Length: 171
Image (cartoon, rainbow, N blue to C red):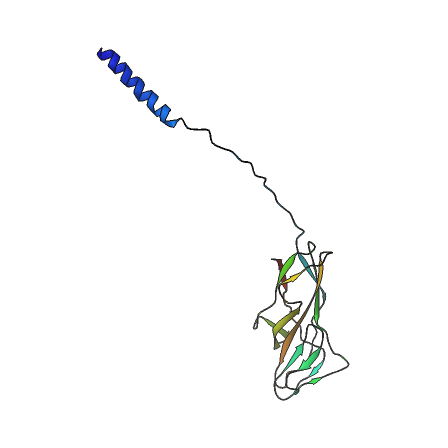
């Protein structure tokens, strides 16, 4: 009898957990995984920013080149030589059609142009179109960039050059 009770107890111990685990079957759903590989966005400079020819004055002044290529002096102390008016920078942007992108322009204090030991700051960069923008149905956009040149009092004559970066990235 003791053996029977012992055997029944052992049987109950092993069967009960299995009965407790017995539940209704679960449900399964399937989902698709997708990805869309886009054409990398690219930017190419097609025209450099040129503030043109300027005759410095005895006081500091600023020369503004708009994204539309319109040049002006903020106080009128410098002389803008009309025969060499300069131009805005122009960039071609390419990528996937109709995609939006952000434009990053240099910050004030990041860019200067130099001639030997002489330098002038370039600041207040502005683009047309502004950020964010979009590529057209062909996956193209033209980006025009202007800025402000800080001409020092009696700035030394010469050809001043420097570089700056314009970055585009998909939104």
